[in-house]
Image 1 (cartoon, rainbow, N blue to C red):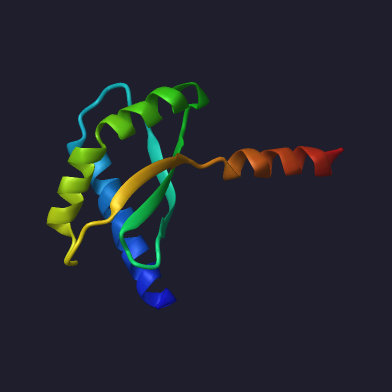
Image 2 (cartoon, rainbow, N blue to C red):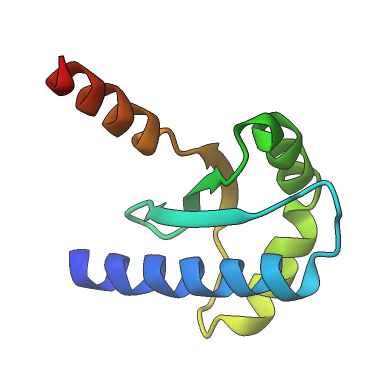
Length: 108
């Protein structure tokens, strides 16, 4: 079961990255990276972790993604070969901030 979850999460990650990069035309979005996608056990929900190159654009970029969630999900449904397309929620990935803080603490 976990193997199927990983395959679906990888497929969602790849397709959403392509949709954001190629089809979502919003100048306020900036550079977006999708480091991870977590899918629920029943494949009905997908939590998409996003990070932004510029920390100043995080709030605005997350708002743009939330506003475009319907378009992204409909495009994702066209690309996926599954019965149902999962409900998407975008979450700000703060892993790099934690890593930076740990490195600072270790440097001291």
